[in-house]
Image (cartoon, rainbow, N blue to C red; front, side):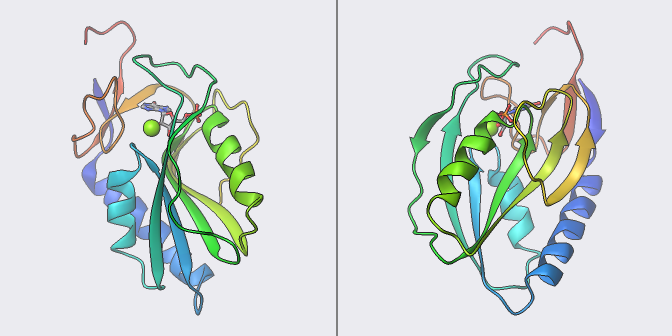
Length: 173
Ligand code: IMP
Ligand code: MG
C-alpha cells in the first residue's frame, strides 16, 4: 500500500472544511449525521474544529462486504436516533464512491423535512459515481483506487491507520 493523504494533510483538509462550515452556518445550529462505521474518525476530528453549536447522530448503512467493489445494495443496520425535522443537517462521510449509499440516505432524510441538508465528505471518489450526489464540502477529490486508513477499511482491517493509503492492484493482503 502507498500513502496518499498523510495525517498532516488530513488535519489541514479537516480544518479547512470546518472553517467553511463555521462560516456558512454562522449564527445557526447544525445537526451532524455520521455514516458508520467509516466516518467515526473524520467526524470526531471535524467536530473539534467546529465553532457553531452542533449535535451529533449516527446512522449505519452498509453496502460493502469483504469486497473492494460496491454491491449496489444498501442495508440499514443502525437507524437514526434523533428527529431532523426543521434542523440544519450535514451528513458526514469519510468517502463517497458510487454514491449509492448516500443517495438512499439523502432521499430518506429529505422526506423527514430538514431545514437544510448538505453533505461533507473527506474524500470524493468520482470515477465510479452512479448516483448524482450534491457534495457541498469535500476534503480531497480522487478518481479511483481502493483506500484504507483513517476509518476506511478492507474487510474491517486498517481503520486505525492515521494516514490514508491506496491498495495497489494485485498486492497481497
Ligand atoms: P458508495 O455507496 O459506493 O458511495 O460507498 C459507500 C461506502 O463504501 C463508503 O461510505 C465507505 O464506507 C465504503 N467505501 C467506498 N470506497 C471505499 C474505499 O476506497 N475504501 C474503503 N471503503 C470504501
Ligand atoms: Mg463505510
